[in-house]
Picture 1 (cartoon, rainbow, N blue to C red):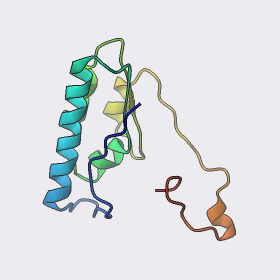
Picture 2: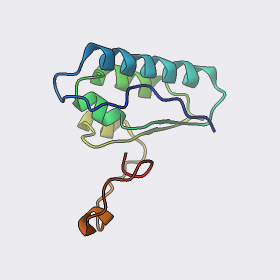
Picture 3: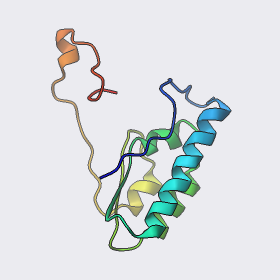
Length: 116
């Protein structure tokens, strides 16, 4: 597998993202389109893409177009909170994770690679 990251190690302001963050998110979406069209990968994961839509980094329309262009043999996984109903309707499998227990409840701070 290969990981390609787009974006900075910075927090993004919801509804008022910096232009650099919008540009990087769009570059990531374009790269996902290239990968899906290329046909080399069976599984493509867009981690936190639902948050990117909710925060105004990506348009809902652009993400829906990506979902619609996906060939049948590709598993496209979209993660993140705030999934729009339109994206949920397009999905073949939709899962909602619910926190039952977390180390933060015992005072453990967020852990790199797990929580962020």
